[in-house]
Length: 300
Image 1 (cartoon, rainbow, N blue to C red):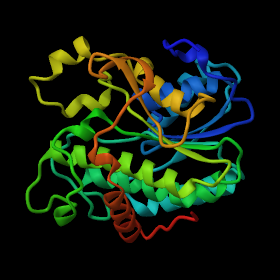
Image 2 (image 1 turned 120 degrees about the horizontal axis):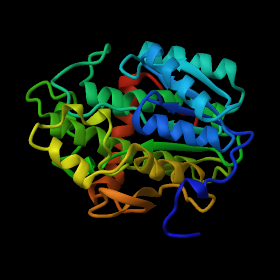
Image 3 (image 1 turned 180 degrees about the vertical axis):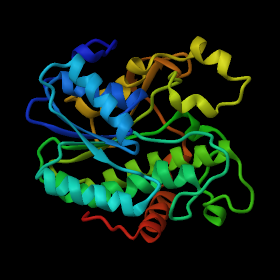
Image 4 (image 1 turned 60 degrees about the vertical axis):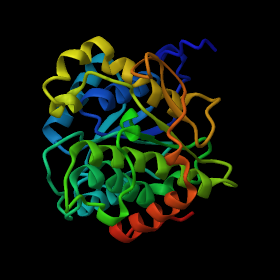
């Protein structure tokens, strides 16, 4: 297979069910559209149902006959996460792909409905809970995957600040985002370790580089003019996620990102994450804390 892996390299996804969070716009929309184009049944798990309806209509126009449905999901509310998981379990006896894509980036200081710092609560805890609640519908499925989207931001001023996880003492939008994206990677690595010995399911991570999406709306003003210069389209930014989700050669615990210009753009390949992200003692501690905060335990 060429190192220039493109959407043409996605194998047929007929008979597979994919749940994509944050699928109404940007990377999530492109991920969902391309999975549908290759035959998957796709659930758009979205916070805003009206935007979700618009996304569903756009996919239906682009992919005649696509099997695409909506599920309301607010990752900033554990009640919503539980309700969505209940609905998904009721509607779908098997889930082949869970793509934890949705996220927030650099917002002013805010809290989720459960009182968590918005980025940590949405990007990490919401997806941690959703995965745990759906996992028994994923584990029995041959070739099933949990793909979680991280960021190059996991390297920037990032650590898991157990002494002030919710940034109640001092808020830095950059540190908080970095912590949440580092948590996404640590969750993937710890989940993969717990899945080892299971024949069917793997956990994989990806990052989109610098993609020009709605997620960038809170970027500092001086950065915005440079995004089109170093970044890439949402369709290109979605390719690492799609490769992690569909490449038959993917291995549990791998991390995919763009292959050019400091991983800001290019074609998807296996990339390395920070040394800190591989600290197993921190991964285990984060897992325990995440179970305590969400009330969700995993069947692995």
